[in-house]
Length: 182
Figure 1 (tube, rainbow, N blue to C red):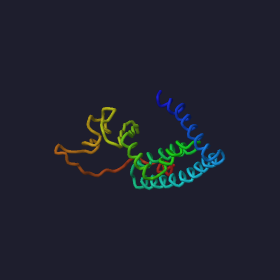
Figure 2 (tube, rainbow, N blue to C red):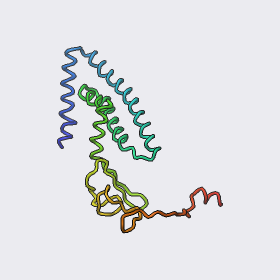
Figure 3 (spheres, rainbow, N blue to C red):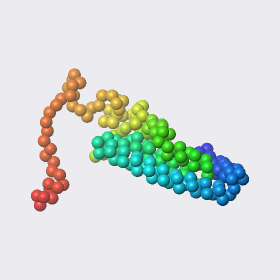
Figure 4 (tube, rainbow, N blue to C red):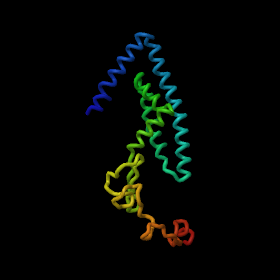
């Protein structure tokens, strides 16, 4: 309830007070022009930083890595863009802080400490906590009761903990193979 109170009551009142003060100092038209200028500059910065983050995420995906940092930065960029489009100098300040790479990287690191990804694929569950820590579901990513970054059971290991190597042949046909046979 206190977050909604802040967002919908206290924040607009603070924005109006700052806009009135600035309008009294530099004039109404200059204040409106300044608010519009910050929106235009913010939209340009959002486009520039958003494309750079998207390209980095695409590179990480192509290299087979999870783009967790880029996802967190994209979320922060979206919040910053929304704040810049909201009229007011307080929201513009916070929005610009979200778009500046140095503060955005720091905010993304803070988000990643709390980020949890969990899901299910083909009947098996997976869990990933970017910042480490205990699993809220009580299991490791592979169904055991261990830490997600401890011993992982998907690998066949002998009693000494060594990996057992071997070869296999995939006998499941792909959709393309089945179509070509018809």
